[in-house]
Image (cartoon, rainbow, N blue to C red; front, side):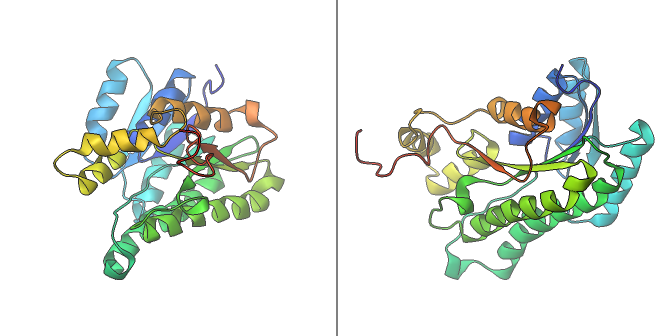
Length: 260
């Protein structure tokens, strides 16, 4: 299996995209340590262990460097190393720019950017040649954007720059750094955005999104997990400093009304 015995740390792995990544990593033989600040982490880890997988859970807020250090110390004491770090944890709260408070701005910046920075800085000393970091950026901010996404788009664009800068710095150590740029994946975050847009009929929002995607559907968390597993594996040994779009072709059309 492509991730056999690799020790992987996945942030935000209790649900959504992170859970999809965790499940696929486990399928391919990785030993997975989930860092998440949601209380749901206990239930997720229990379900995974009951299914026969080797998974550990750590209640960690990635804004808190001391909590990160403590959790990483526990991982290294148990496994001796970190082979893969997936910086998946992220947040999104839609607000018009002029109505975006400093608190909402900093909520995005502190988790999406600083949290990824904190995790990478604390994990890298325990990563050796052949190790890999996978960051979750987005097509939002790097390629497209909608109203209300200024804070989110800014942070996700920053993560692509972070990926390239860090990749250049650690390539001499044999460590690779890449980013995934998802379009719409069916996650609790998307469900929340749909509810914010139409509290009475959020399903209509999801259906409307799907109509604008050439594949006519949203992606699954498992599909995203497969891409993350490839980038984390030795099969991607000549790939670093890049961003890989997974969006069902949503950023492909030049004009949405043409050819429909």
